[in-house]
Amino acid sequence: MTGKYSSYVAIGDSFTEGVGDPSPQGSRPRGWADLFATAAAEENTEFTYANLAIRGRLFDAVVDEQVPPAMRQNPELVSFAAGGNDALRPSFQPDRLASRAHEVVRLFKAAGAEVILFTSADVGRHLPGMTLMRKRFVGMNDIIRKVARRHDAILIDLWREEAFQDGTFWAEDRLHLSTKGHMFVASKVCEALDVKPDLEWEGATVHDTTTSMDVSKAQWARKHLGPWIKRRLTGKSSGDTVQPKRPELKPVTRN
Image (cartoon, rainbow, N blue to C red):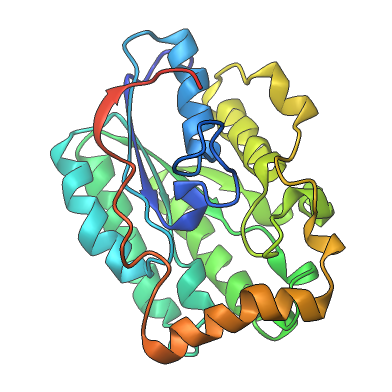
């Protein structure tokens, strides 16, 4: 598939925005989508990339806010990853998620775009309290696999990747991927699309050398869980004031 696609739009939440992977320029996070786009641009000088993802977005918001502007740009390749924030909430509705996921992929496919889908990595192995919610993520991932099969989409099945047992793949908040984790995902996307990954990813260095396992549960709860609960109680989101970092398709420059 090398060089097959010349335009790529990334849709989703913090996973696709790149939270957990600080940009070398110190501005917005980088993340796997930026890394993949950079690698793809090395092989295709006409490659353009947009990233509409915003942290904290629920599934319906991703669909309602990001799918229309993505469709208007008529991309040849789309990545769609959402639902993790929903699965963390008691109001999670898997049947509604399944119905809308099928419709989103059908729309992009009908427009001639290839679609990349992702299952969630198994964060429950190291995030306190997640064992109670693990069944939701298992069910959500089953939905994504079914959607991928029905519409012949590309599936990056992160749930089955043993690499995520490594604490260095996770940021200090234990919920988002670290630089190393994002590089791993980028390499998997490159593999699926026959794009040559950056050799530097194999020796990935985490910008913050503190791994998710180095922070005590008490420290983690005070610094990360407490603020998350406060936002839930007040109806706020970490992405309330965040705008897409690359709203329009444009050429990729190497960081």
